[in-house]
Image (cartoon, rainbow, N blue to C red; front, side, top):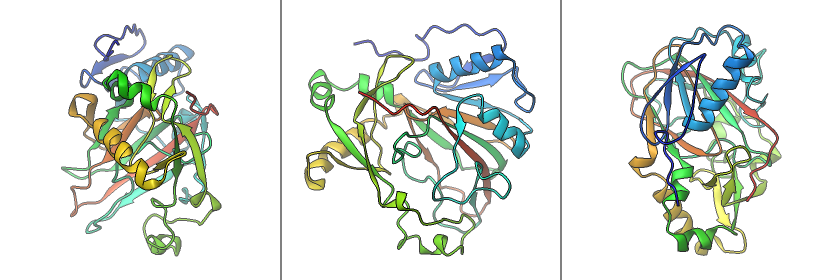
Length: 295
């Protein structure tokens, strides 16, 4: 089975430039100002680059909240999160804040955004507002490669399986009561979504590329359909650990006003929590194309 990387994926770009970050995934994009409306060709080439590299980062982009929302609309419908409170006047934007001295942060476990949605997030667009002088990187892993590098026997085992996803632990109203009471920088609203469970294939086929990818993550995948949690745990632990091999990854080091967007369902990501004495503020928008993951 081919193990295609960004080095072997054919791509021709004329309105933007893409510099690969690693052979596995990721590219630094130049030649475009995201604060201005995109031409049809620019939008199409950014989408093409996103499907190829999965993670795109753009330096020094001066986006207002309104322009951030307008940018997101090129890639899908901006989502309003059912639990995390959005920005006043711009409910689609979540202010991801970690203040100095806080020991935990938003997104500090490997995950795919909102896999507990019936139709999970397609792409995420993060705009840096304030970054620490060192630390606070975001790590990404390529779930196409995670699937490709499984043995044929393991692929046959998991291809027909379905996983259960839930926000019940990540947004636990008891463990995170201070956020639901509005006593933290990031505030939560309780929703029935917290307790709901949704089913997604453990192996999905991307509707545009036709490639298979592994679709499980540590934060939201709770069990395998038809198995007890105890029976599911060894297989889920193996798959999520397998998916985090360094050869499948890239790492984004943030700078002020940088924008990073990623193809959400074919990647996992993790926000490094290594900057305890500094503040970090990001503006996050997620978008959805309305297509559910399918086997």
